[in-house]
Amino acid sequence: ETGVTQTPRHLVMGMTNKKSLKCEQHLGHNAMYWYKQSAKKPLELMFVYNFKEQTENNSVPSRFSPECPNSSHLFLHLHTLQPEDSALYLCASSQDGGENYGYTFGSGTRLTVV
Amino acid sequence: QKEVEQDPGPLSVPEGAIVSLNCTYSNSAFQYFMWYRQYSRKGPELLMYTYSSGNKEDGRFTAQVDKSSKYISLFIRDSQPSDSATYLCAMSGNNAGNMLTFGGGTRLMVKP
Image (cartoon, rainbow over all chains, first blue to last red):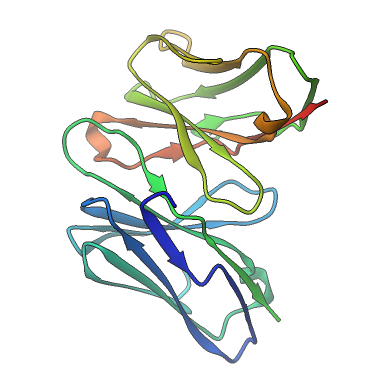
């Protein structure tokens, strides 16, 4: 484990379902991120939270709804998804301010929308 | 033009070869440069980190940054089948908080 834990590891859901992805970081970081990684495409930034406040929403459809109740936990609520939303969803955290040492990623949730 | 360009590969090499992975970028404000390694069905893990120009060596891995050419490289010596993965470059500037800009990744295959 990297210090960033994502659950579930795999998720299959129908287009009418509602589900949530969970991310927890044990590193004391103050920034958390959601990324989408589709096959043969670059990482796509979805949301950024800094000190629990959302600072970036990268034109993500409203069927994706983030929640950050505290600086250690991040959720991504999913509803009425489309098959093209099938991808690996990665959570990451970092310590904002000072020197940039990069992100620590979780192992991701492999989402399949049927 | 993408802010960070990276050849997607795949790059296939025999075991023991020296591997060179590269990224070019357009934003002269970038100061922090990183390489991530991502195994199949896993999240990316930080492999190398450099600040500004110069070289950094860690075991079989060497990261080079040439800011004048806006070009960074990762060299892998004595490549092993376990090095087979996708390698992503990432970078950021002082005025972007900790926001990283990623390349698209290069898939490397090291054949025994």
